[in-house]
Figure 1 (cartoon, rainbow, N blue to C red):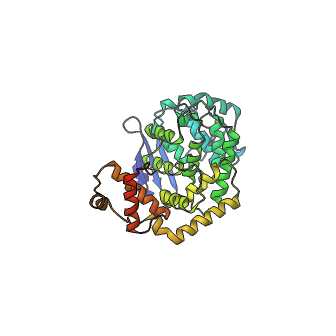
Figure 2 (cartoon, rainbow, N blue to C red):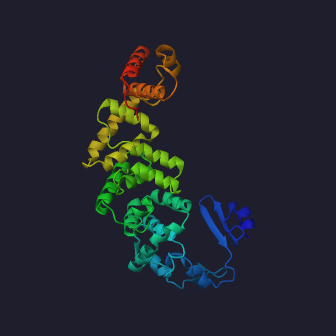
Figure 3 (cartoon, helix red, strand yellow):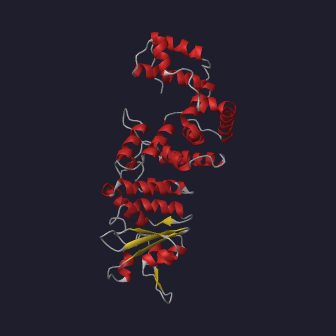
Length: 368
């Protein structure tokens, strides 16, 4: 049946059940349809397995009779998110995270107190869920237009900050939740005034990481590495997060701004938005827009010099002119020369060779 329907729509057929049970997903433009075999279970028992009552009613075909044993239509009309049963979350703890997503996906919907208690009771069981499944759900949640509602529920469900620190169900934070929400609101405000150039999901995730309570010596970058190892992040998303987390604030001098643009590349509007929302002193919208104007002016004036600078000298030049051996020291000098060039402090080959010779005599720390 699934294959015939996929052919007629047309749609892509995805096997969900494998050899365990008959379950298929049809994916077409504007449509995702799951088809599965109830394996002889009565319809009401099958509906009882759903997570929320608004997902727990059915329409009989033919005839169109609505089967709604858990009053899902009433909850749908009342904008209420209610657990279908007491085992709605314990049977699959990932549904706790989905509850936060539905809160952001469905404007005006509220979670009942009993449903919230059931979800909190299962939050600590996330260790049973594969990291890849959690990652996919997090990606969907972070991309929601109304992420603020979802983030608020993440805190209530005790998934934040615990889930990001391998301690789901432990919601204690050194930062007051209201401070986190204030920063998220600033982030959304700034993003709204950046002409759709901000990758909201990346900026939101970076803000969540930087607001994690840290043990002595730990940083948000350490948390990113930990989540990457647990499968909660892809390598690509971890790399983008590290670009944002590298800076603690938006540089105010020209040299710092040029390096900021170079380090972030096409992600710089997202990094600027994130930094404006996280700085200790609240940044006004006017200040944020003025910062963007200065950075955009630098891009127009010196874009190629900043983003794709032609090397003034190469490693071969350093070996032949200064007699340097290949190795770490050579790489450090080249990195320092590149940074000074991007910052606008070097513009000629002669200047680069002169600085390189000085660095050989007086080594400095490796450029970051």
